[in-house]
Length: 376
Length: 259
Ligand code: SF4
Ligand code: SF4
Ligand code: SF4
Ligand code: SF4
Image (cartoon, rainbow over all chains, first blue to last red; front, top):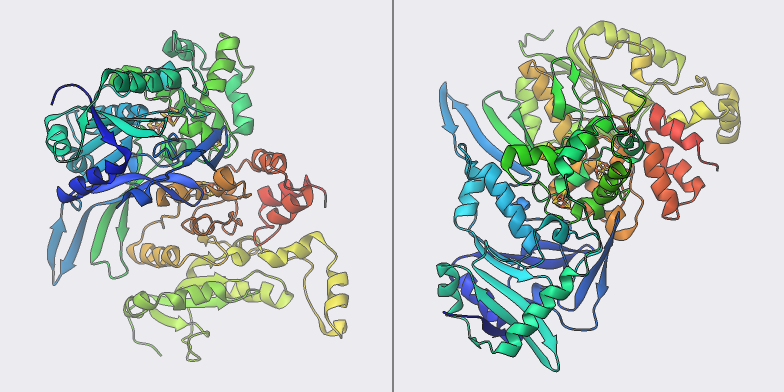
């Protein structure tokens, strides 16, 4: 198929049916407990049609829109990490019966997912996690199993959130690659349709089975306008100029101490971050002593155990933990993986219970670049 | 006398509500396995038949509030190889530690018709204030899975795994939407020790702090945020003065807020 196509609003459910027909478990945005989260979606009725979100540092509220937009909000507390790199995974288990050991060495097989509604920052976050968990010398089998069969329907944002800064990070709002299909939602003058771009062969094969027609020049232009407008509405900005070196030369900046007074070291920022990948493993045994299991769970550089080595935690202060987090995201990640570990999704800003804002903290350090704390 | 070669378990009650012991009885599916691997030698909530010490493991519920109990805990310690406190009462003094910050004589005269019969200490103290404790399990009540972990770890000769991270870590792993951020509901999760599995936020309530302070709790920063969101100083003070009022970081922070 050449060029862009039009999928009418009323035919979106057809896309869902075709994906289900191909055996995909479709993960999409849905309203739950006062937030738009990612979960299994069966029909269009599961989508938060006509809702939006209002986000700022430490606050998130769902609100009604005046229209029927299907994707009229940004990202919520969940990310795709939940499905590709789940919070709790049993890596292997061993059972002894009559002196015989049975060992399961592989984790349970992952599901075949289609992500419907992936934003540009999400695609970049996937690419970041791919570099860590999938493309290196030691791919993570749990991640790889899900990643290989993944189908992605991207959505170009038609609205920027109060904590979004993808433009600063060069990760959005326009989804340019890494999808099978992409949709731009257009509304107005009685029309409500999606301009569709096909990003892969598989995407084309699936889309051919959904009713659609070719887009005319006006419709394509309308979609471009949507994305261009959003780019000008970012709730936050982050000056990335010289960022890595600026942070490296400010490891003793007084700002870290000041953050320590506000930071709860609760770990929320790392767990909501779509790129943070850290885990801990714990060996679990049962009462009989005949069964053992190795369980992997999400961990965070904000916990004391994270940097525990014989005798104590290397990062004993909250200041050093926050510094680890921010300098990993924005500086040492670049040395490790070639890109920043931040895609500007704004989740860490919104979901920090005390509203600590990574963009503000960087600004604070930059403002007094080179300042030294009195403390060792 | 018992001829069993299984390690001998004893369960002791001091000033408490029995909720923690009940968590052990609640472990219905595992009860058989417990009985198979441990000799339940002393557990009067379960059986009047008791076996004399010494015991390999003593689980102690409840705080020390009377002279009689202060002596009894010494005897338990002497009889036990390993002593583990279970729950907020035994670990930090429990809700009854509220009396530590008030006049016990006034309570007694108000509550009891014949106060002259009451013999009690002025403070409710944790077991660790009296004897050496090998491990402290938090919670009001303790979490069943963590209690089983304590028994399992004891049998395997290793440290129990009960991380001192925030409740938020469990909350996020569970995929719960943060009630503080999305609903403006005050939550103690960011300063509270994990262990419950972030139960309350999963039912749209703020954390009550049942497991006491986490590692390095920044109570001042959290309560400043509560106040900013409109919680009164009185409510902050009361929220921190419950089952874990005896934990220094909670009590100290509560003192900073006027009633
Ligand atoms: S920055 Fe915020 S979310 Fe992150 S650990 Fe500190 S208080 Fe928690
Ligand atoms: S650091 Fe914050 S803004 Fe950046 S990707 Fe992670 S959660 Fe999003
Ligand atoms: S910021 Fe912390 S939790 Fe995130 S990937 Fe880096 S070390 Fe891990
Ligand atoms: S609901 Fe409470 S425990 Fe859960 S993340 Fe929010 S503040 Fe933490």
